Every structure is written in C-alpha cells, then in structure tokens.
Length: 165
Image 1 (cartoon, rainbow, N blue to C red):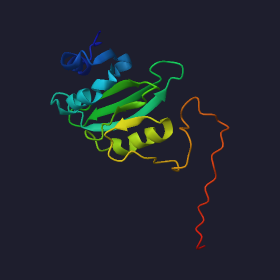
Image 2: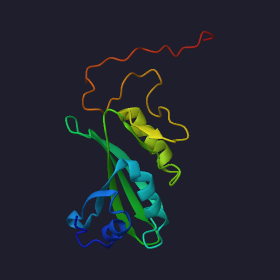
Image 3: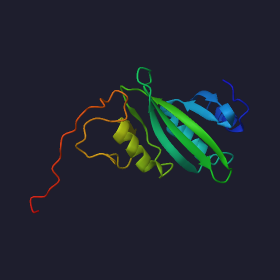
Image 4: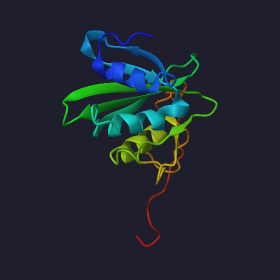
C-alpha cells in the first residue's frame, strides 16, 4: 500500500498499517479506509498524536452503495486547527450488522451527526450516549436516505392535537 507522498498517510501507515485497508491522496486530498473494528483506535491516534493533532471533527456522513458489500461507508472529515491539515477517514459498515463504534467520546460534535446518520440510514453507533431520532418523528418507519427506501412510501399520520384544545 502506498502513502502517495502524504506525510499524514505515511504517519497513519507507520502506526496502524494493519488497520489501514487503503489510502489515496488524489488532488492533495488525503484519504484512508480503515477496518471498522479498529476505527476508534485509529481515530484516537489521529486525535492524540502530537504530529497530527486532529482536534476537530468537521463532518461525518454515510454513503449507501446498494448492491455492494459492505453496503454502507461511514465518512469522517478531520481537521487540525494547530497543524492546519485535513484527513478523510472511511470505514465500511455491512448491511447485516449496520453497526460501528461511536466517536462521540473523541469529538463531542459527533453527537448530533451520528444521530442524523442513525435516523436517515439506520446505522447504529455503539456506545453513543443518546442514540435516538433527531430529524424524523419516532413513529417514522424506515430510513429514507437508504437507496432501497421506496420514494412513494406513505408514513402513518400522527395526530398531534391535544385533547384539551
């Protein structure tokens, strides 16, 4: 596996070669795909290693590759304020388990982002402190950003009028 001349990827590969499944640095955009079972270990290293110091989780999201295994891919965008560099981390999530570790213990900003992915894709984040729907009603059935979610599906109506009104 090549590090493509990226010092960030070289540092990650030196420390976690067994957890790093692939890397690329297309157009100067450093990306590493890591084993999902080692995601928390890798992310902790990226945050705590002084030469990297990824102190900010800019964004996390999910991509649905219907028909591929693993079907889902979690994508994390990290930034170091002190070092002024960025890194993208990807981790596959199988449709069968639809589970991955939560990074809320590393970056508090992950809280609502993980809840959004849970709500819209159905990915369960292990050890998340408050994993519940954030955008959709608790009675909503399914996960509407999954590619196999029927676009014409109707949801049950919920009467929100109180009996006192």
